[in-house]
Length: 194
Image 1 (cartoon, rainbow, N blue to C red):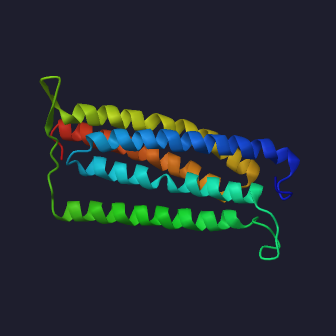
Image 2 (cartoon, rainbow, N blue to C red; image 1 turned 60 degrees about the horizontal axis):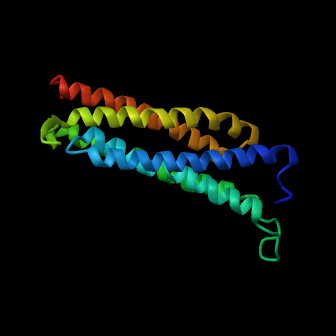
């Protein structure tokens, strides 16, 4: 392990690494579930894109943590990889800014065009179901893991003073807030409020 991390923080770092692997697992399941039910709903597409790009901060944290913990000082890198976390933070922030701009653009275009969202039907087991019911279930599913993981990440980020982990905690907060907004959007469509 790198000498740059004090002994009292090593357990915290390993806890953060384990949590980020769980984060990637649950995010992958959410992406699959949301992708299966997104249909023509702009709300669901927005939530799906946001969830998909939400994997960037945990991936960057894991890469940075690996390089910080396993990287050796060399002639080419006389200070080791202690600053790689800052590079990971930059990559994550660019990705999140891109997500924000993309979502803003899609929302403005849909608003200007006054598109009326529709949610179709799907046949399951010989019965026709309104796809909105599956969307609501997917949105509810997408709320829980980010809420729990984000709450666990914040104290670890503060203890480690890690901007990248803190960014991921905020991204998880954004994920569950987007899920709640998407849930409200699908329910609104079901009630006839476009």
